[in-house]
Image (tube, rainbow over all chains, first blue to last red; front, side):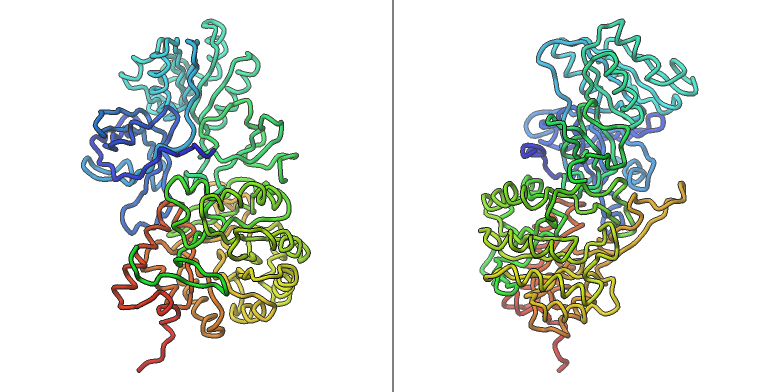
Length: 284
Length: 311
């Protein structure tokens, strides 16, 4: 834990681009040196509402990708879903506005040392951190399959440059408005078998992560997922974003998704007991 | 910073500057130490430690509210054994001045915790949290009743021995906080921590149920600052010689100054840290500059200055 967030910094980052992408906003921020420290899976925490706002808590956003331009310059890109007061404020900020950003925060996806066959699964804007991950995996000689799912086409985030970073992309929507009608869990088992997948990386709603964990367990493949719980601080001090996780010693503890995560081993999370304190939890 | 005399005392304990973290708002210290050196704080106030490890409450544990938030953590923590084994030595190694906060479910718990802590080196004071709103049974909020408040503090006083100052943390959810303050001071408290969170509730209009798993939660943040200023003012008026560690929605140097003028000898930064990990450091430098700009020759001169008689 003590090494987590060691490279985090606080910057006033200028918005260099803000464009609508389906149901989301793609926002690019000039963050300077911060970009060089970003690893796929990390997130940033952004102050919302401007000076004197009644919103006292930051909002957490997964980093879509980061570009280190050298000489202390760099950019990060976010995919913002404007569903609450805070994220709507961020999405409404114009180019040239400055945002108070802290990052990179949290754990990152583990990158295998050997070339493997990886399946990346994203739900809604949960696809965001997977494209940067895909680039890293490809650079290591991995084969990358990707499955993106959402309720409807507008909520699939799959930009052109992102698509180029994967070998094969499958899209599912619950209403069938694009891709295969259904959920990601309907198509994953076949892809695992056909492509001899070694590891699954996922990001999206908790229900989806739970379903993927079940599939990964049945197929005996590893599964790293980025969890999403509501946070107050994003830096590990407030203890609100906890979920039950079984440790290597077999003991279940309430771990923080911000600093013990967001990337966790799917098999360790006690999904069926999320939002509760399961029996036997340490300290229960 | 400068040669301005910024030091303060809580009871007999001396602190280099008056800006502390608030209990439960600084993790184990490690998390914040990624952002600034803990030795720069007046003190780290630890989360409230209990006898046994504690998993805390189910989620959702948090709801943002206008200029504040509700929390219902339920004192998740490692328990006194692991705390003494890991957290205290680490804080000492960082050169952090440390105030240990303790919480018990029974009067006997407070006695045992006091005995466990009395000979531990590296602790500057003990905050006795008798006012956490997130215990299983609201009936256990010792600070809501003068009799139970006295019993908890007496239990610590009898067992702590030595010079370690006892700071009783009180709840604002009482009819007359000054009466509770008098009670715990006569029971042996050297100082008072004012205020703990205010009990509140948010109902989710989609599910039409309380938003927090624990139903009620503690309201914190700027929304409660006027309550803190009022409580500190009232208690300082009644007990001018008792040190007060003030807290409640402080996010700027101006906010801290209000609490100091009301009578606080030190100020803890809580919820502001969630929005800004550097909050304690910025409040510290802003307060420092503000005191100089106002013409105070020392920090202590400003404590309770709002109570001065009109000339």
